[in-house]
Every structure is written in C-alpha cells, then in structure tokens.
Image 1: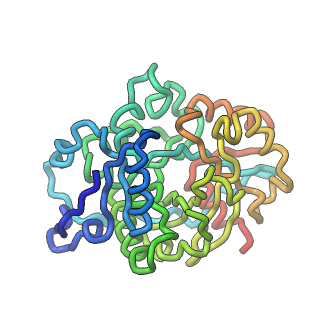
Image 2: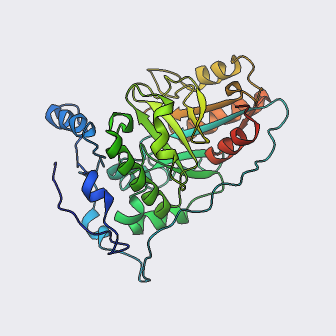
Length: 331
C-alpha cells in the first residue's frame, strides 16, 4: 500500500512540523517475490526520497501507535556522545563487530524476530548474551510501537547493542536522494534515533561513496555510519574513512549463505587478513554483516568462540569498535 499523507504535527511537540510527514512516506510493502509491482514501486519511491517501513503484516500496529506512556513525552534530544576514549585495543588483536541485518523490518520485529525461546533463533535465542552482537533496529519503533520497544529494551543484555537502520528514519538509499531531500532525511533520522537512544546508523547505498554521507554525519546526534552496498552488504571490503570528522566503515565479509560466507569460511577469511592486528589502519577492524535469513545468534556465538580460540581477535559491540577507530586509526 502506498499512501500520501497530509502534513501533520510531530506527536511529541505540536509546535514542531513533522519532517517525516513532508519528505518520507511509509510504504507497507509486501516483499513476497511475486509482488513485482510493489517491488517496482519500492525502488521508484526510494529515488524520490521515501523511507520505507515494511509493516503490512505488523500485528496491532494501529493500537500500539495509540499506546503511549502515561507521562508527558517531551521532544527527544540526542543522547550523550560515546566516550571519546575507548579501552585500548588488546595487543595483537583485530577488532570485530557482528551486525544482525533487517531490523528495519517492523513486521518481522513485531512477529518472528521476538518469538518465544525455543522458536526462531533471533532476539529470544537462548544463546543471546554469550557473544557481543550489534542489532539493527528501525528507530521509529520507539514512537509507533512504544510498548514493544520498551519490552525489547527491558530484555537487553550487556552484550547487545542497537544501531539505527537501515538506513535511519526509513529503509532507503540516501545517496540517491536530492541534496534537499537527504538533508531532511538526515534531520529526521537524528530525531528518531534520539527517541530510540541510538547514536550509530547503518546505511544502505546504491553504488554510493563514503564521502556522500555528510548530511547524516553533520547531525550532532549521529556518531558514525556503518555502510553497506545493497548488493551483498560487503562490497566496500572494510573501507574506512572520516567524513565531517566522524568515521564511516564498510562491511568486510558477510555471514550470508550460500551467497557469501558461512561460519567456517568466514573465520578462515578473517584469519587470512594481512596486517590484521594493525589498529592504526583499516586492516585492524572488521564489521561483519549477518544475513538474518540464513544465519542466526547461534552462528554468531560459534564464530565468536572460534575467533577467541585463535587468540588474535576481539569481538566487540559497534560502539566499542567506533571508539577504537576514533582513538587509534591514523587519519
């Protein structure tokens, strides 16, 4: 379903025009392979600066959108930036962060993603908490499904961390936006991330360049970007650069079967990296996108344990990886 909404006021602050309503339209698109027309609409609307929220099978979303805290909700402000000084990189270690994909998919998050333990091996996996994992999550969930968002945050462990996206306020290719649309999208992304307590955004690009990410990184509430190319997530091969004084790092190897790597081949590829313990260059850091439809928490835990056994790897949360880059990478 594609619907154009009239301008509305921000639900948190009636005096603030809602940027999202003016520039970003939510399409409840079915991703079933045979829905060719919906897929065509999805990409066309992306090019027109439209963020997409997969929500056509979101259970009780209308009810949850009307369920808010009894306390007055003020306009969110960006949370405090990550500490400028990280823990030192352990000598002889390569820093790795696993990032679970597809958290932008609201209908999945409200259904199978959080299915009871013993079911699908995602958020409620019995293995969660045994390895550090970054989870993508649509930041708008904090406002459109507040009860679910609070339940999720109430079950987080010290080894879990949420980052926004992809690609921020909506599933999109921001590098395809016009300059004006990208600026509006960046402002809305910061606003929604503040509501969700997020400071790192995962961005999907359509043959994009790292230096094009300036509008997002100009926002005070965004500390860094983890950037993927749409085709496989790791075409940037671990590229690392600073834009607006903040780091952008690309996925290095994708844990995605059968297209790319399974657990065993991923670990072997990481072990074979040249200069892998040099924390002053991009060689010392790896973001591993985890394809949610072919791999799960158990696979991440297994990979992390194999890397730990090797002795040259340190698996960390996304914010820890970014802090180390800020401190040790030579620009």
